[in-house]
Length: 307
Image (cartoon, rainbow, N blue to C red; front, side, top):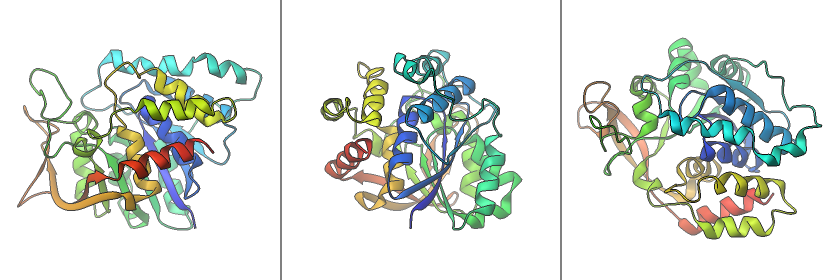
């Protein structure tokens, strides 16, 4: 039986490839994709997601978006890339097709609540952006927590420096948590099972150009491979990691990860705002990914994007 999944993301390159992965993976039944404000502008990221769904001829996935803003916005220069993605030349091939979904859509929080409430089994949530939507979902619908199997979060930095580089916060926090630490705290305070994919493990997996080459070889025959290589090519000259794709693969096959249960807490204000840390007296137990079978990860990535 496929695992019912909601994907909450903030529309950057890695998020969008994660969207593709979760849709294609045979072990996943992707129900809803919701876009939150983070490393993109929501309307551009929504348009990019609709173009991807149209291009890949997706079926039975609701695409939603949410206007709620995080506490600490991502840099504007990063967020502009969502417009670039939405206007990629590859999407000229779908100009004659009816868009996958009307531009009018539901609020992500409403779509998530409806999905969880009516699902035939417990739902897994994969979140690869700030936790704004999930914090609000839990605050507004506390009883739905019992119907959530687990939340898999790309976020945090436990025993490594963070990647927020503002002068007052330099190297203390990871961006997804820094963007809305109170929302992460809300998720921590709930009873839902959590798997955390922090920088400690994503730092081990920079973008691998050998993978791009393998996908490029089949790009003439496989749409997902063609689209993924186009997306990754936009960031291949930068220091870029498999932050979100690694997190999505944790939903596809968690057995390739090494997890350790740690009591995790987060700083919600002050000069260390957004810093995640292990705590003896506060926080709660979370399954934290510390390592991954590299060969198994790359095999899943290439095979799924080859479908």
